Length: 143
Image 1 (cartoon, rainbow, N blue to C red):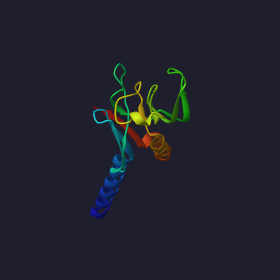
Image 2 (image 1 turned 90 degrees about the vertical axis):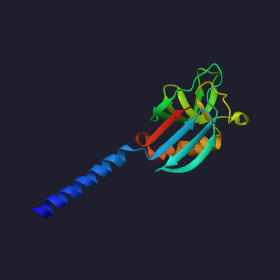
Image 3 (image 1 turned 45 degrees about the horizontal axis):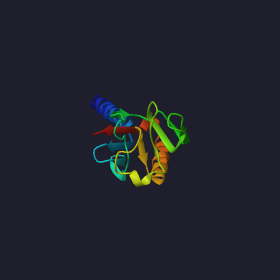
Image 4 (image 1 turned 135 degrees about the vertical axis):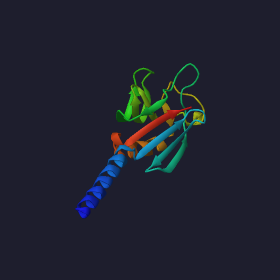
């Protein structure tokens, strides 16, 4: 009986641990609006830190914790003169993390609310999200 209880306890602990691990995001993008940086962590280890541009004066980048809603290899903004948005990862309605041609503005607020990245970094992040899956990705935007 003791052996059975011990085995049941070990099994329950293993299953509980797996359920906690499965709820944690394997891929996390932390966007720090005050420093205009995005830190990407995979399994808790920082793998990238990039300069970004978030909303300039008069616009707003939403704060909070999100999961990706959808992606587009190339998107054109119907709201802002068909502006190209390569490697878009949409996380809150029309807000996305995406590449930009305005790389000289990275590191300071310059967008209409999206999180802009260098196109090469946007491509890397896009591929990471596709590999990890929406359910295993967390996007956190904070001040």
